[in-house]
Amino acid sequence: MGSFFIIRCFLLFSFFFFFNGAFGNTWTRTEMVEMAGYGEQKLSSVIITGSLLCKTSRPHLYSVPIPGATVAIKCQTGSKRRSKWIKAVTDELGEFEIDLPSQLHAIPDLENKCFIKPVYVPRHYRCYHTSTNIYKRIKLVSSTNGFRVYTSGKIRLQGHTSRS
Image (cartoon, rainbow, N blue to C red; front, side, top):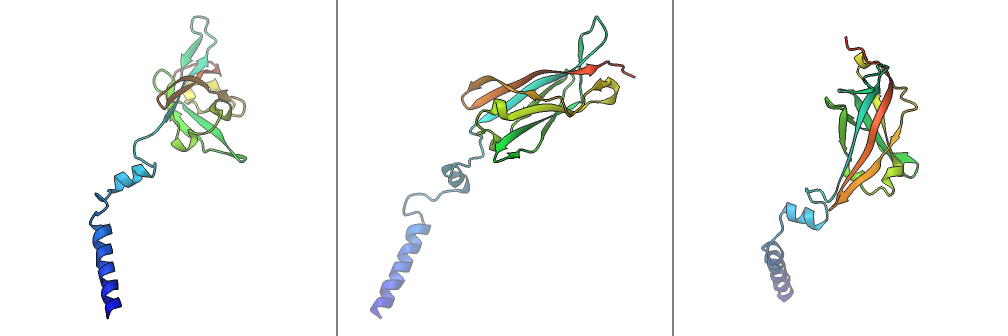
């Protein structure tokens, strides 16, 4: 009978001690996620910028921007694997911006492990882009407080424009 009383007291004490915050306050999901290092706020950001241009045969106009084109980046992640293609569409000035997924931020030597290539150019630009041979490396432009910016610079495609 005495051991039953001791076990019962221990269970009640344990219940109140652990579940009613005897150690202090109980933690919310958000607090536990942050303690584990998986917070909703990003610890770092990696942005890749660049522009896509079409070289023309017109002497007064060297290159024109290509809006509505699709460019993609792929990175070598190690162990003979590559990431999936991460795509972006160019704006009216032919410029693009890709926010690299966080699982790729820690790749060492990102400049030599990632490349960009155009994957789609609107028909009316008639720029030749043999998708097998146009790859552009990225270069680090800025790095401050966990925010890195890389650029591919200007990607120039051969061809001429004829807007119909």
